[in-house]
View 1 (spheres, protein in one colour):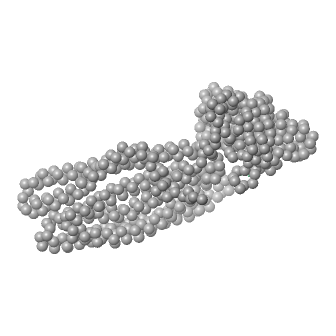
View 2 (cartoon, rainbow, N blue to C red):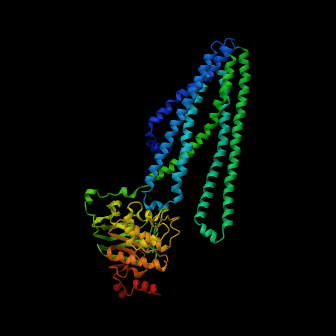
View 3 (spheres, rainbow, N blue to C red):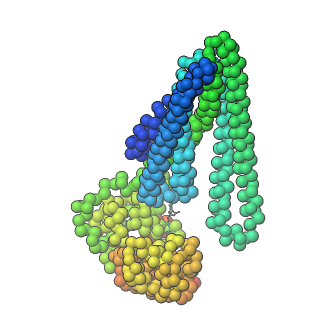
Length: 584
Ligand SMILES: Nc1ncnc2c1ncn2[C@@H]1O[C@H](COP(=O)(O)OP(=O)(O)OP(=O)(O)O)[C@@H](O)[C@H]1O
């Protein structure tokens, strides 16, 4: 089997098309480089000229012109540096912006199976810290390395041309500087890893505690939470302090080596001056250039580490981009093939359907078959874990990969694009997710106008309670609708399901206990839906589904009984038992 592990280079080239869009900016940035290098070389060259050919000769006639040149060179340096940084940083920022947009577009289309196996925090960190890491580490690292390497090589060649003996003095100091920086960087890398992982752990812990704040307060566990958090952040602080120490040490060591180099240059330079091999200007130019060579070398290993660190982020993003969008893999019906076949709901047919969530897992649906025609009501009944919600999830294409056939109006469900189902089916969910927005948004999800929102609310008897809220439909629902009762949340979910006038209502009745006033509203709404629409319902209270045309009783993924309420009662089987339990 061929290995699918990509090299860093392959991953990186996979992202190139994002940056390639800004080729013109990259060309502008890179073409400023020769000017920057030229300025870096011209400056010491002019200095030598001024000292050795003007000052040392006692002839200052050319001095104003030389100073003018120097000013020009400095200005050229600033401008080229600014053009380089501005344009290439802009490329970095725009590229990251585009990657973020592409990532979000991808994430929201990923199948539910992805979200089942991936913690939310991990997906969010791809969009935040991984992208930030690419911005901070990769973009700045690469920009720094390109600029510093070209400048350093240019300067070294220049110094060798001016005087090879003094240039060799500088070159001799390269190996110890590289060794020391490598050693300190390794220490820093380990410490940075500790700081990152301890920060991630403490932030994760804090996130969890804030999410579960009501439990923390209810059980008076504030002190324990505080202690644990202090312990986790202590580790972070400790590693950070150590890292600061090493960072400062590296800085001082390089400053020390620069001083040693200066002493060596002065010492050997003085001898060369005395023997008239070079002018004093050359020695001064060498001293002036030292920092420009040693500081980039100090930063070099850091930039390499930063770039390496960003490879992990690229790898994470690549994984996310490689996550399959399940629907795209299927041979979906074209618009022409569908024609008007899905304009009105006619029937659903489950034909020997089996399903498991993952290959190798046990089947949670086994050979399920049933038919539901327009205008009928089908109820799914069974103990917890028997597979009722799984049937709903297959119908809404939340999960794919069933065995057997599911036909909607005679068309294979797997081949129907999800969007086409939207106007046909509507789901009244058990887990009501309310957005931190007003009631109207929560009902219409910004897809329908206010009259349609109110019409849907009236249909499910939610209008009255919504009107009694402080700002009616404009009332802001905070933290997932904490100010609403479980029943009120359900009514909003019902209204949401009604906004698109879908012909088939998929109903997942809530198990949560509901106050009696809202309960009667919910019952009225359900009765109306059952009377007027085609319904597939998971009902926890059997009273809700009494009037259904067909009741399927599931046990461990299999249909064990089917029939109307009366027929099942007569059978004296599982359904009759469930009914008995409910009455008790
Ligand atoms: N995302 C998932 N991944 C793996 N297994 C799952 C997943 N969701 C449900 N299951 C398993 O599938 C089986 C059927 O679950 P399902 O949610 O369909 O039951 P249910 O009858 O709707 O139960 P309840 O009445 O409690 O909602 C259970 O054994 C459950 O553990």
